Every structure is written in structure tokens, then in C-alpha cells.
Image 1 (tube, rainbow, N blue to C red):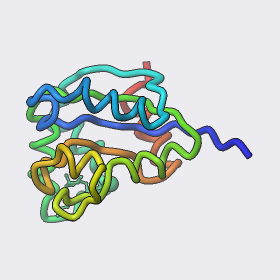
Image 2 (cartoon, protein in one colour; image 1 turned 60 degrees about the vertical axis):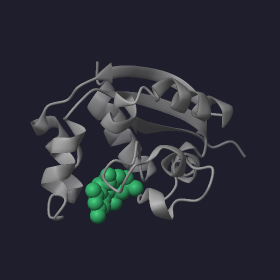
Image 3 (cartoon, rainbow, N blue to C red; image 1 turned 90 degrees about the vertical axis):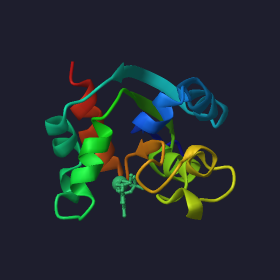
Image 4 (cartoon, rainbow, N blue to C red; image 1 turned 135 degrees about the horizontal axis):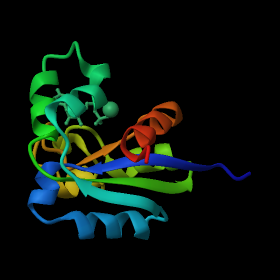
Length: 136
Ligand code: CDP
Ligand code: MG
């Protein structure tokens, strides 16, 4: 049975800074994702705080928001069967040193904060996050 989904992916500042966006986009396409929309932007600290508000109470929240707003990012709508979970699998564990071989975070991540990619963690959040970046 078909379960075509869309999810939000972000190529984070550490990866854009190293000019890895084309290589990472190629990995998505090779893994069966279509990139339905994309844009390279830089967000403000306020926007980062809004985007990551679920992490408000975490000790790393301030740094996380500084970091996501520190440089250009590439935001993308990815589409595939079971896109949300498939993207999480391709990304690998949050901490690159714990991520499996072949995952994006293992290949490109520098550290738990500079882990190169974001991906929505549920279909509900995918909808919210896509709306956040692509509402006209
Ligand atoms: O991105 P993911 O969903 O895998 O992880 P998260 O738990 O939702 O955390 C969001 C982001 O916060 C991570 O991708 C990390 O960049 C950052 N983080 C951090 O800097 N230090 C931690 N101990 C945990 C997460
Ligand atoms: Mg998350």
C-alpha cells in the first residue's frame, strides 16, 4: 500500500559552510527522495527559537538557536514512501559518533551540535515544519 509522505530536511550551517549541499542533495536523490521544493536562506535567532521551541527547556537550546541562525542553511521538502522515517534512517543518530556507517551524520557530521542535517521526527511535525518554511 502506498504511503507517500513529505518531510522537512535542513542542511545545517556546518555543511553549507563546507559546501556539501550538492553532495548531500545527491544522497537524498540516490536514496529515492524527490526534492519537491528547496531554498537557501539564513534565519534570525528569533525564527530559530520558534522552530526549535520544543527544546526550550533543554540546556543546549540557546546554543542550538545561535547555531542554526549563524549562517546559510538549505531547507527542502523531501517526498518518498514513508519519507519521515526513511529520512531519519538516512540521517542516522543525533550524535555523529554514534551514527551508523553510511548515514549522513556519520559521513558529514562534526559533533552533536554540528551534525549537518535536520529531519522532521513525525508526520505531524513534518507538516508544521514545512508550513514554517514554505508558507508562501
Ligand atoms: O536532530 P535530532 O532530532 O536527531 O535531535 P534532537 O534531540 O531533536 O535535537 C535537536 C538538535 O539539537 C540536534 O540535531 C543537535 O544538533 C542539537 N543537540 C545538541 O546540540 N546537544 C544535545 N545534547 C542534543 C541535541
Ligand atoms: Mg528532533
